[in-house]
Amino acid sequence: MKKNKPMTRNENMARVKSKNTKPEIFLRKLLWHKGFRYRVNYKELPGSLDIYISKYKAAIFVNGCFWHMHENCKYSSILKNNHDFWKKKLEGNVERDKQNYSKLENMGIKVIVVWGCEIKNMMKDEVFSEELLNTISYEIINRVPDNT
Ligand SMILES: [Zn+2]
Image (cartoon, rainbow, N blue to C red; front, side, top):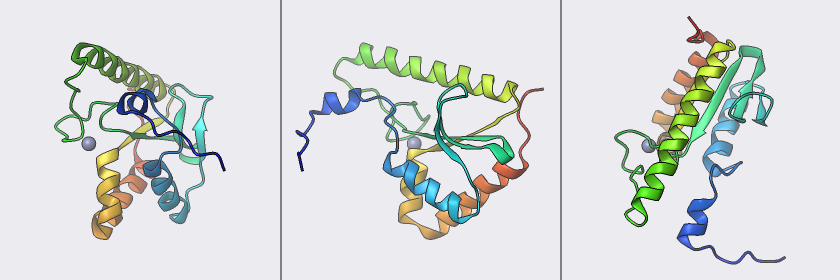
């Protein structure tokens, strides 16, 4: 098997929104066990959804804290190197997120965001994992889209 050359930090960082990341796969498995059936990397709707549950019209985004600027999160800080470049890029991501979420909600699709740091905690802590999964399940089934 051909080994990939190790990437520098910058190359690594530049791969925006990679698909099928570990946190995504972790959450999908839990949802599957809960009985939810979904499409992944669903491109027919705005934002190219990480997870889409058509039965409940629920879009789930698994957002990396760095890329999507998770507020008050230790994993979300703008890099000191090329600070202005990153600031602009990340703020652009957040703006795009906002637009996609409101398009979806306007289409009657509820948007549920799960943060990378939350999934990290889920991986470490079974009780937290169960609680958060229950909250997410409840939202998938019961929440009403914000399109009023
Ligand atoms: Zn976070």
